[in-house]
Length: 294
Length: 252
Image (cartoon, rainbow over all chains, first blue to last red; front, side, top):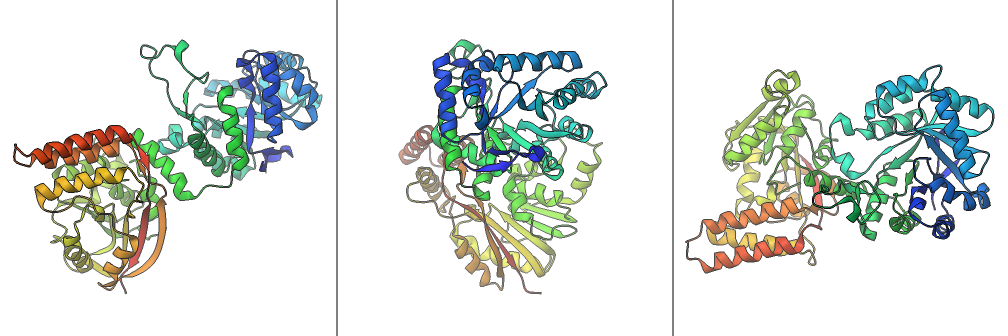
């Protein structure tokens, strides 16, 4: 599988990163098999979080067995020093390892949170101390919030090694600033920051619960995913061809093998084919009805 | 203004900034929006369809701000929407520096090609740039071909002319070569072309409108409409064919 530089981390990540939340939906034996499958396909970057149910614990056994083959990303939603430190120690404990390669601020959403994490008593101070102690390698940030907020964060956090954010044709088709994650990608590239793409396989929101109760959804994802091999491949190719360092696999284990297959076969994507997906998404969501043309 | 990437891609290597432009066949204003966004000094958006003229004007107006928005006001001041026939343009000779025909020629019947090419050439200043963005003929296996065939059958019955014709880039290049234009470049805008549910519905709507224009007892009309609705239902959406952008230049 193709690898790309992950910003200043010195790591070359495979173009697919395993989103280990998928393990939460499997029993331990299935989780072990999943990790073996992912490694067999050549993936060298895993991403997990304490908020993903049992995922940390279920990743533990195979992570310890294959520790040297895996670049491990984890994250915390705590914004203050003490909370972040506690969550880091808990993740190390639940994963059963003594080092996390990339520790990320999880799901930054509000300006106030950026104030808090960058403050003297904020989460980033805890991250830096942990880095000094060798508990973590590099510092990253994840967000599906306002792109401008991510840009601000990149400006204000000097030692930021990676950013993780949504990128797919549906998002790319929206021209407004609220969806301008391409600006984030561009700025990260200029600054040499590693980029991880999420939501690459999101098709749209689930139907309202009156129409489709949550318990009847066929996938664990909080959005409705694309789910045929062709669509998965198109979406993977699109995300990878935007220039992301790596594309995170979706949260439902039923989709992972298809994504691994797409990543293994990735060979670039013509710009006219990329535009085709954006144009398709634009029309699905267009305020202008009755268009014969593109 | 939301400008589709087909338009931004076609315009990106053309000198639009400060140019007097003609958008031939305004449609829903896609290319007009792109020309204004790229700094055109003036855009004449020509269409023979009242609804399209209104949509194009509306398009340039900021959705959040009716009059106060400076960008929106400036854009509108640079736009003139003209309701006119492309075979008889209400513009003087040598008047425009850039012409866009974005998704125009597929709705031009073969019999009208010469009249339009001649008129576009007349209003083009020496050195004028012309963009012809359109669809290559669909591959045999594309299911949407049947829908376009029904659309053309209904249009032939009602108007005596087809509704959609997909001209190869090479054919339109040769047409304009006959008027002294030379091909500057050819690039692929969409491959494949996504014919979404809303496109198919819009094409079925054309069948409906043409069938409505037939005598009430037309059995053929009813059959065409039924078949068109069934096709839209069966196809859902399909990605097929290619959309190209052909850039031409008139000698200085």
